[in-house]
Length: 248
Image (cartoon, rainbow, N blue to C red; front, side):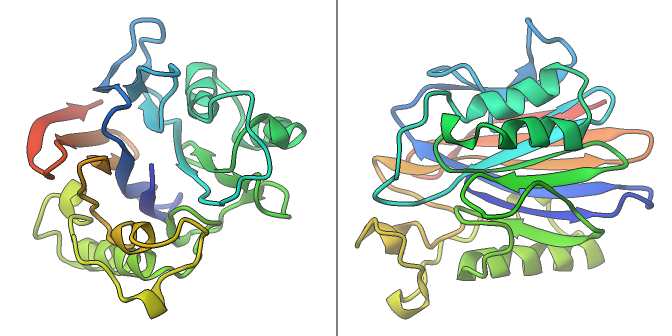
């Protein structure tokens, strides 16, 4: 994933409301969200290149989501695919805090990442590009892109506002709230080392190009008695190609 916004409210009827865009090179193969044959309790998309995933949920309400940290030049090359972080949490019934503390013991196994893991009562965050240890998130509205949690990039601030507005008046499907394709002027963009025109292209919430772009938009709502998951896939022109809906 490259853009996530979520409301965490564990003492409410809906502990988690989340919308996310997955941005990736079009040449990297992936399968749409599904129940995994090897892990039937896991609902997630599948990276067909390295075998992991970027966002998923289980029957009992465990959830995990990942974004890459954009940092060039990268200080090292990870030995393990970052998608394995999400899959390992979802595949095995683990305590969120203990899981992230274990990951934090060997952070250099992976290229830069942000990882959110949780269940209906706890939500934890960790980045191997932060100086902080794993943290338990307080109730609130959060945003995550390709830097540490709540870094105020324009598209991230806009995404949080979009989710806040949706919660007040849900006038459109949740998975579509991050569809804006506008880019931001250079003086508002972060300087992540990738140069132009990439910085401008990636400043949009929904990215389109022949090489790289938004491949899927996903919404996840974890209620106290039900889970709602929607994912829509897109081609390189940003045209919807497939949509799946699940209620657990």
